[in-house]
Image 1 (cartoon, helix red, strand yellow):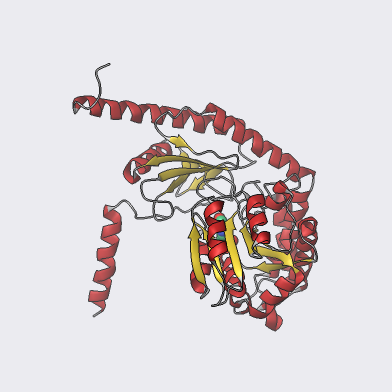
Image 2 (cartoon, protein in one colour):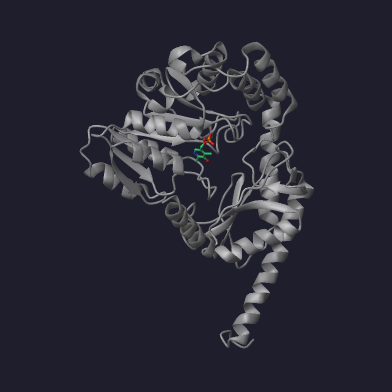
Amino acid sequence: MSQHLLGQLRDELDVLDAKHLIRRRRTVETPSAPALRVDGRDLLAFCSNDYLGLAAHPAIIAALQEGASLYGVGSGASHLISGHSRAHAVLEERLAEFMSPYMEHARALYFCTGYMANLAVITALAGKDAAVFSEALNHASLIDGVRLSRAAVKVFPHRDYAALEQMLQESNANTKVVVTDSVFSMDGNIADLPALLALCERHDAWLMVDDAHGFGVLGTNGRGVLEHFNLRSPNLVYMGTLGKAAGVGGAFVAAHTTVIEWLVQKARPYIYTTAAPPALAHALLTSLDIISGAEGQQRRNNLQQLIASFRQGLRLPSWELMPSDTAIQPVVIGDNAVMLQVAANLLEQGIWVGAIRPPTVPAGSARLRITLSASHTREQVTQLVHALNELEAASNEAAKDEATSNGLAEAP
Ligand SMILES: *Cc1c(COP(=O)(O)O)cnc(C)c1O
């Protein structure tokens, strides 16, 4: 019996393997930084979401240690039993104040992870009589939230707000919820939130924004995509994660106080889980100080300069550097096996980038997901640019040779 069940799984794994879709984890032995020790090797990494380089910041490490001394390690219970500590309460006040320029009567709610925050918001706002309008390139956690809600779902094409407007017009649901990433995590481009918000206000719909890759990075003060576009509306429900640019872990939802009260009462991923260790919330206070202060601004400026120099240096005629101004700089190669070979060649040179395949991205758009951080040096970025330019030139030559030998290329 168990042989049969295990055999089924092995067959499925073999199918994945044949399609170059088996994923492997590498074990990192040093704190998050551009220079990592990975499985015993020194690598230069361009694949973390630690955009400001805060994940191993000495002041935040000290704050985490202080938090553990003050509050212990575990929270001991869920928030609605006895797990809601002073550290969580203070963090939520600080986050609400931080986001208050962009919403009236702002309140914030701290979650263990962004994945759970997304499940919480969508399932709490969209009951079975609601309609959810979901952007095609949304993150998996938003998609799972939509699936878990029992609402009717419409997926609108990437950044096609005319199609969305049509869908909103045709819907007679009592509650409408539009859900979108702000910065698309595998493409690096930004949703046109001013257009989306105008639509949502016109059609009396909630606009739920997942700013996992914007919080801390976008906006002069790091308040994220709402600051970037200077948006303010009672229709907004904002989700920011705290394990990427903020360097620690967890996430928060900021919205009108009535929305937050509704989540506390109704959101199952908030209610039925043990509260995150309070020391994490305490450490996040220092992270917020850095993000909102002069050091944060300095780090954001640094990151912007690295992004510009990365884009200026690349010459990739046969690959596609996606149009992105953010720290996410994907290079689309297309074929899974070719992309994996390029990633392996980079790794031979000691450079580690994300290798992203379907189903995370559409079939035929396998890509290197390169992420830059404020803690990279210009020399490190130049090293990556040279390596990519040379690999592209080599693979272009190889493709031409093959075409010539097959008689497919025009004679020069
Ligand atoms: C990382 C990510 C999440 C999940 O956040 P976690 O805190 O890692 O669970 C949600 N949405 C997007 C767009 C993300 O990139």
